[in-house]
Length: 314
Image (tube, rainbow, N blue to C red; front, side, top):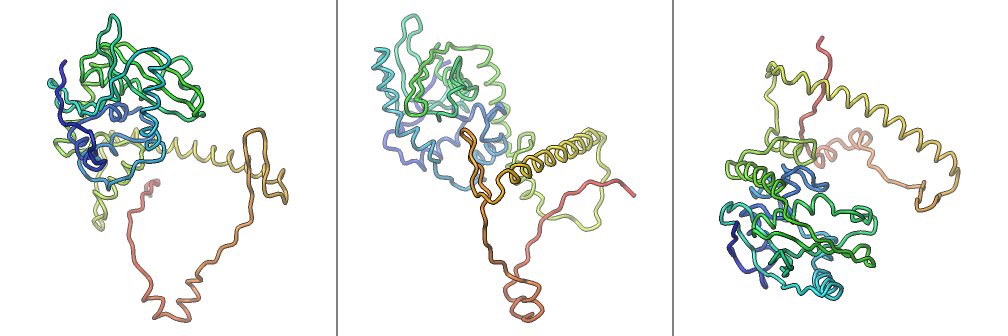
């Protein structure tokens, strides 16, 4: 598979780069499409690609990842002797134009030829994820890059917690690449057709439904399809489990409060428990309405939403 340079990203403003990313699926999108990303759902990605999400600034982790990328690249060369060429191009697959790649760099590897280089930074809390392998979302990312470029391998290097440096070589996985192409193709069809992918349990799915169906038609009624029976059973089971877990959480909280007594802070190993006194001032709307009804009406705003409930039919 060959790739072409869609555009140079050198000195490209961040906002413009984000717009170009909407022209296809990038490496960091691959794990989202596969449904294994811990921070973003397919529906949220679909909303982003269809320009239905407000612009969001890069978070602290993403910012420092970008700032430290040159250091990770240089440190990898220092420790391995393998030179890395920095790339400032947005690549596009010629066979599957919806697949894009923004490489951190490329390097030459004996017996493999030109390979991808990927730089990462990770919190010390995630050190365990890098012990014997690499996190699944990054595996999807680098296999996506190899799908776009046709390269046979990737070196991925990571700075963990600011004081641990690791790197690993990953070979091209044709089976995983075939799966990525299939899933990404199906997802991109949803983008082009402006039809959402299958909904999940994410906040993005809930927000999408609230925006798509903001109000109900009074007294309207439908008979749900037979497939709803499994969903109702799933809902009931989740509610039962939630009740048990909520009680367990409350019991643990109560016992910890009993141990703390009048103390504000309690510690155990690396955990800190606080039970602080908090003062709040609240508007007494009931009294305001009784004593100053006109003023209360003037500053009262009305909002509406749809309440979802399930109960037994009478």
